[in-house]
Length: 300
Ligand code: FDA
Image 1 (cartoon, rainbow, N blue to C red):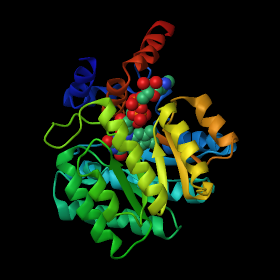
Image 2: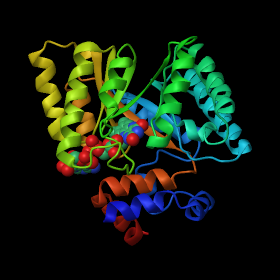
Image 3: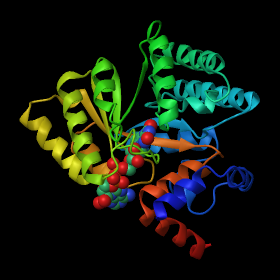
């Protein structure tokens, strides 16, 4: 029930606009690294000092104006330069709808190509985040066209989709992030129960660890993480072939602990003023995160 409320709130355009205007509020500052590039580079340096690399997400999604999409593209290009100039260990995650997928496919492709080309100069990886079902196939189409020219690009497999096994087999030669899936999807396309999603998640992770190029296991779920640790040991899989990923501000102790134990670890670092939809989806996944909000409201 709460999940549905927060997912509904995540796409509310009026609240999104208000959030941009009034800055990081409601506890969002605990899970968003900053509102500008300087603050974000500082957060990345702090994580790098703990042996953690970063994937940087310039917050924004479901953009319907060309001007806004071009602004997002320019901000991402700025971050790529800042990562390079500051010599920090980080790459980029981006959402195709942020750079125009809902406006025009070719326009989005041109924006994406410019970003991937800029990053390729520095051998920097670009991850295409996966959004809701309606955007999944166009995102794969973008990816496949890019792969004709560039190799510094990968994507996400969402385990709740029935199509996930087919997608992972098709893209096994790529660096892939595997997740459970964050959006509300209908039964026609997606598993609905926690048990089914978890079972498919584990199956996909194992498949890519055994057959794929590089696997980013993105979860805060300690049961899955412990299972992966046992699985890689049992199958003698090198620690160079995979990493764990978590979101900035979540399970910080576990992030540091895994890095200390010698596992590759990458934190997803969101930044910018368009934090509202991202933040609401995190509340939908884990209403306990409301504690962050409550603490914030009563501390201030
Ligand atoms: P889940 O929320 O299912 O929790 C499982 C269990 O883990 C809980 O019952 C609890 O015991 C424990 N737990 C979880 N969070 C905890 C916390 N904060 N503190 C203590 N215990 C906790 N989705 C998508 O659709 N497209 C995408 O591109 C991405 N990208 C992405 C990148 C990264 C780095 C991450 C971590 C996640 C994504 N996601 C995503 C989101 C993903 O699909 C999923 O919605 C969330 O990660 C929530 O699922 P989890 O696997 O983390 O655990």
